[in-house]
Length: 314
Ligand SMILES: Nc1ncnc2c1ncn2[C@@H]1O[C@H](COP(=O)(O)OP(=O)(O)O)[C@@H](O)[C@H]1O
Ligand SMILES: [Mg+2]
Image 1: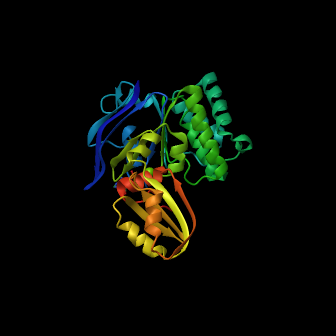
Image 2: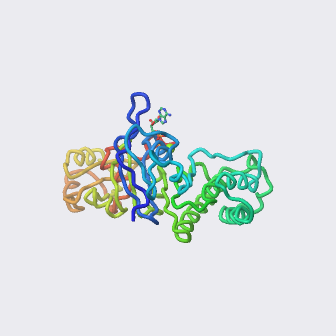
Image 3: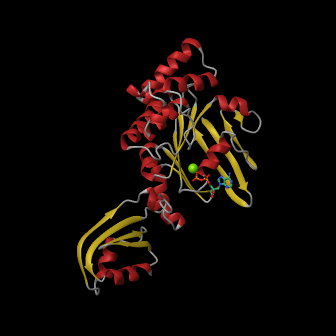
């Protein structure tokens, strides 16, 4: 059963097309990854899906509710963790939870239970009495996440929940995502520009760039889509540049990159390690190490767009 359907969403800011006819479906209980470099349009997409931005065209359905026709009922089914942390800095965790729980219509015993549950899930421990302004970035993120799920939404949308957090909080956030998904069967939409996170957490992945779909499928499907563009890593001393030039003119070599004494060669299925060995003959090169790897999502992105996912990263 599809819990979310995004249908032909488009959005312009001034003259710039920021969302270009985006469509996908999400099944109940999926952890859906939305992956793309900075500026790809991920936040615009998320904000359009939840009605914070009005689309120029298209529709979003959550359950049977349309964001255009029935936004109030749609919003009851979702929780949103925005990219920018939204908390009251001068209040402590409990006070923030009381306030936001109240906004979701929780009161009395139910509100108390959900506050305790949120504190436990966030693992805020002895930070409880401190004001939020004294928290680390990671602690703020954790609180911001549990705030968004106090009403046990069917769908939780998370926009770059791990940016600016310490490794411990990052792992904690992964655990929260998995726990929400397995214990409450919450459908999660997880947005990130870190491909390792999406690869690790998500069963379905939508890769976008310049407001458009680049690829959409399971991790394995995406890797097959680039016709298993494998990578050869070659370390050596000598005329690496000559080899690089020769590889660049080979139509079965998708990309070559040199770092120090290592070449990273992205190949398609037609190219084999043997072809490389033949190519090396006649070049003055002392090969120290050579290995072949399956592609990562980074390579999938590179081969489909011609650029790196990490371009322009901090
Ligand atoms: N309110 C806005 N007005 C004008 N341009 C915007 C606005 N919000 C986002 N953009 C532009 O839309 C593009 C996509 O931005 P965004 O959705 O934030 O990308 P991402 O979340 O993937 O980093 C960027 O080029 C950004 O500058
Ligand atoms: Mg964003």
